[in-house]
Image (cartoon, rainbow, N blue to C red; front, side, top):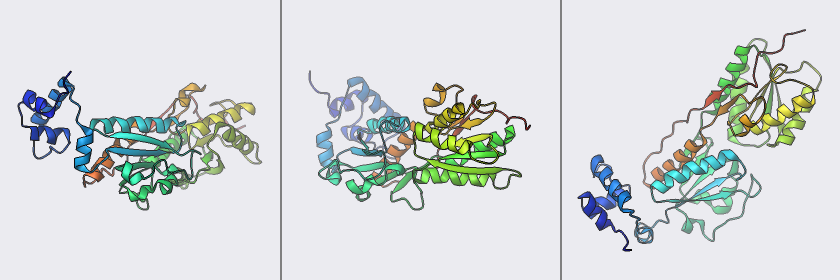
Length: 335
């Protein structure tokens, strides 16, 4: 079966081959009308047209490949980020290579003989930023995810409104009547968790009678369970609400409460962050903050394409949403 060519697409759409090249190369804006561009795309889809990427890459001096650097494949959030990035990449004839740091966070080995020759750009989570040194990622067009926009090394950043997410949690718990809080904080040194801690402290500092304690723990269910159990059995009044940096930590906190014979939410309210599948797999289901992970990936790839084309990337934070479930309730009545 003969391969469909750009000439075939041009004939079917009733346009020139130059117009087809502009539309399928995503260079049509301001040069081809929207109806014409849509007609070209429809013709290409109907004919099953696939561009000759080898020839086009040689002509453009690009590999049309992006690298997505994440802490670990086992984290559901980053799997969703990859899904979003790959979707946008495919629409523009790009591929995405997924590169998880072998130890979850920290330095990693360079997977390429020459990253600069193999890649057009990099999208990286701030939690895996140390891996960039190994692949010399800062020498390539770089988009940072969950990173300080004022200090990050990237040409663009894509952030979630994490501070607002923490404010939504505190507003919800304060409205229920809670005033004694325990923050189960991730021990990972990363901007994304620093933002959560600052926002939580800021939201409670002017609330009369509010008390906030913090314990840090590695990002695992077992570590969170042990840290929470120790905190709940420490001297002094017991907190009535646990605010966890992540759903994984929240599940560990729930296990600690059950070990101590505490009921959730009657004796203790627990909140998470992320809205992973875990959040609805536990009983009671977690009140948490939903993060649009696929949109993070989509925005990251879109920002990289903008950087490659010399255009400004969208710098607006992505909104997040509190999801109230059964792990939160008013605090128990004082004896």
